[in-house]
Length: 148
Image (cartoon, rainbow, N blue to C red; front, side, top):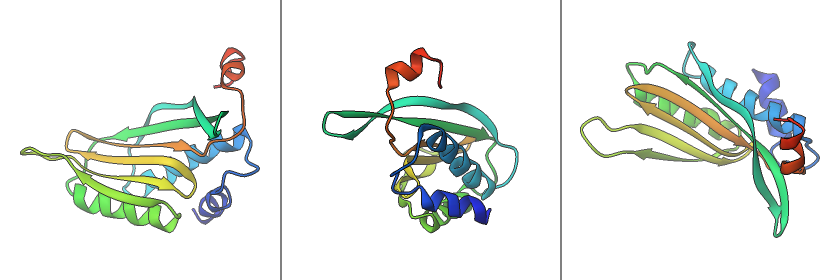
């Protein structure tokens, strides 16, 4: 776990990271986040290639990845645990809650080792997903070459 934190912290600026490192960084980030709230997670999506902007008129690529599992009996505690973990990695967090009788609790994140992240503690099931930092790459060419 400490190795993952060190690796992710080193990638937080996105500078010098290649596409394979970006891909691995989001898988490592999500796996580390899921471990905070226990076992039983399964891959839902990814890692999949996406478009992003490195600057005005300069395109790049990023990877998105998501895992899911059954909800626990204490979603509030799980949101707090994930939020604390993300803060330790340098992610800026924001909690949210939907309306209604059975609100969905969650926390969103930006920065640090990721472009964005989200933990939804839905009573029907949990989801943790994220997008890697944006890195240099040609989305169209990589997609055509099957480099997802």
